[in-house]
Length: 129
Image 1: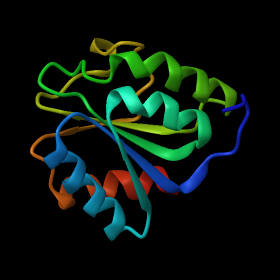
Image 2: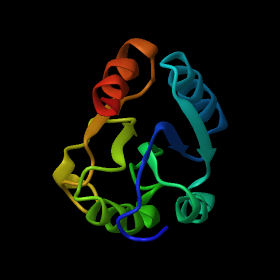
Image 3: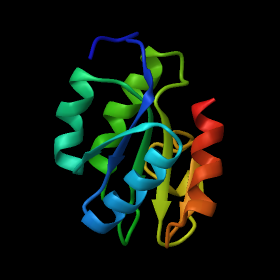
């Protein structure tokens, strides 16, 4: 993806190792009329080279570290878009402060697991607008 690319605001990339979490989040995304793209932390880097979603939902896994290798790539993409896109949501087994994450200040919202539509939909709606 070239720096300064335009984000596709209708796309939400769901990144994580848990297939169940990927499916649950993808269904919530579809319920908002947005288009989910499901990736593993390893495949997400390649996918981001070809498409810039408006929002990326990161499943942090048990230690909030599953997507750490992706954070420098996301930071670079945000610099290229003036710091706004992609918006980043972390799904956490325990509430993490932005300061405790790799690259603090990069995550726009933290949502506690287990994920429910009532928790995640308002966050995604706010970030999509």
